[in-house]
Length: 329
Length: 218
Image 1 (cartoon, rainbow over the protein chains, first blue to last red):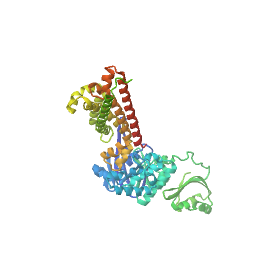
Image 2: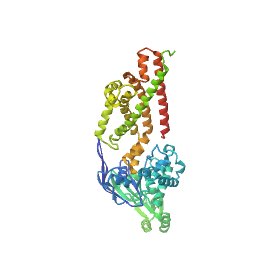
Image 3: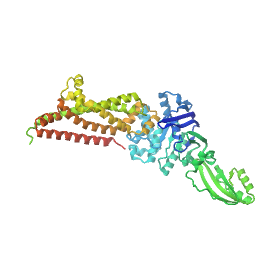
Image 4: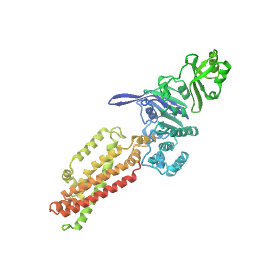
């Protein structure tokens, strides 16, 4: 669906050249919700803007739906861009147009008939709960409502891809959840491919099937959200995940074995730990833990101190039950 | 009280002033708006970035703006005769008024366009909009309040210029003020013309402000 090959982009300024994208390869499958995370300046915004060529790479090729955008003439590129919706952190709605006219803009630019535009815009406003705001101006709406308008506008020309550039970063947590639920439902109901750029890990946990971690213009890690978040392979990922977590390390007992247990999927709901504990006579104390879900997949991550002579057996029983166990000390 | 005031002459002069004002304002906007868009669009990092064109336009505008209007009036005389056949009366005043005001207005338009957030242009590019569509559907509507406020400022500057144009025989209230009020020491004529100019300026400002408020949805 989306494929970047060896994409490189440098910004030159008086201060010297800065490499925003350094030989990036990326593939996003159709119908997938793909997250790109990283600190500010990591190049994630440049990356998403390269997908519709708002940012033209210095080197490398960009393919969308098997069409090489980097080789297209301006008119063909404009046609291709209509199949790629985009929403922004600051919404970028036009102050001079009503909500209705903002949503209609892509079709107006395309030169569709008035009747067709009216039908499509009405349908979208209805779907996104914007009908009552049709005649208002953007300045009269809240942030969450403005982003809904942004989404409606991006959907008018029926794109197969929606690029979200920090789409929830200017919103409060409640509104963020509201917008994420909407994006999630668009992906499920319309099969829309989503590419989300964000610095908020919660956003990725909540909606992304797969995630890429960026640092210094490079993708340092890619994979299913659960894999990347539960078993981070790079320091960059670990430090991103550590953000917002408690900085005091879990307390360590002086005796016994400490292990990190990861439960995934339905296993999260199995009382496997207490069962094995009872059967082996190994006691356990929970030192730290987190139970949640990655999009649809529930997971649990626990730090456990085991005490008892059959600890090793308990651990191998846990592994046999599909629990990932990492012995820490 | 107003012994020297001939109200018929005053009425004629007022109508001449208004005629000069609106005719030159209309032409100023017609010429200054595209010039302002060109100044903006060819600027660094803009839609049609072009250093050479931008430098040339910018130079012409700066030269015209640095010539004092009273000098421009005199320098323009032959050009004016060539353009409208006379250098006198309302018609003779319009070319120098436009040449004096259009570069000024173009700069105000450029400034108003610069206020439009880049994100809006990007959003439109992402929708597949052409450069022409971005200018006509996004930049100009978004900058409209600034463009109208600029037109108001320009109109008021033009009122001052029309009075100066009286020096080279353009007619209007300025002409009356100089010939009767100043040269013949008829203070009452001076007072009446100045009050009328003041009223015109006030009305222009109020109408301009209202119009700006109506199109502004920020």
